[in-house]
Length: 307
Image 1 (cartoon, one colour):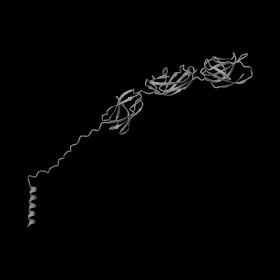
Image 2: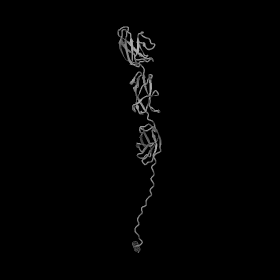
Image 3: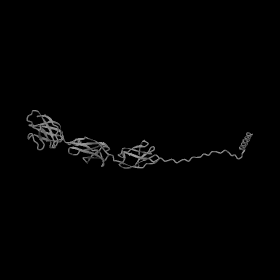
Image 4: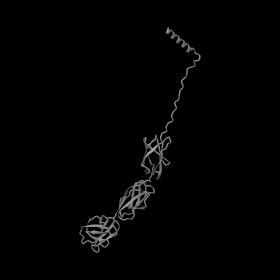
């Protein structure tokens, strides 16, 4: 009985659902869009270190920081510089050789146009480097072209000046690596040479030695006369008042003892002396000879074989 009642209820419900005129078309599901949050802008690039913070043209500079992105650009004042990315936090650039000395604002700009704050960067004038003097030792009696000295180095500007013992000396800038000058008439000893591009950019000084010590290069027998002959003494750094020591006895000079009143020493220039020797006999013998300058500087002692 109960089963029959259940079947009748289900049948009635089925007819009601299929024949109901109020049933409409099936409902369609609506798509609901989820609102998107605005993108967070990338932080501005930040420079944390500049090494070095001051340099000369041609120097390599490293910039470290954060937020550089890809392909950041460095500006020195209004000039855009080529950079090389080392990693995401470091880039490097080279100061152009033609960069003028002065104080610049250095900052970085990312490809999206966002820039960092600017920092002061000092460009020094190019400092000259004096590396050698050729020659570094010169005779005080050098003359003409022998007195020309080449100051070799690098970074010489076309207006570089050469200082000799603290004073400007006329010089010729041959190239950025060579300056030539003539040695002035100076006392013997060590002298200082410096090259300056600007008053405050000087090279390390180098020493130039001017030799005044006499040196005997050669002794030859010269003209022969009735009772004397001439010995020609060749060398360098002989002076007007030089004298010679013949076996320790002075000949020539001022106030010096003479072997005899006839013995003479004739000065013919910085490189030649003539000794008029009056021998006791024509027999050849050995004697020692030395040239001494007024200041007491003496040449090497040599042995001469002559009458």
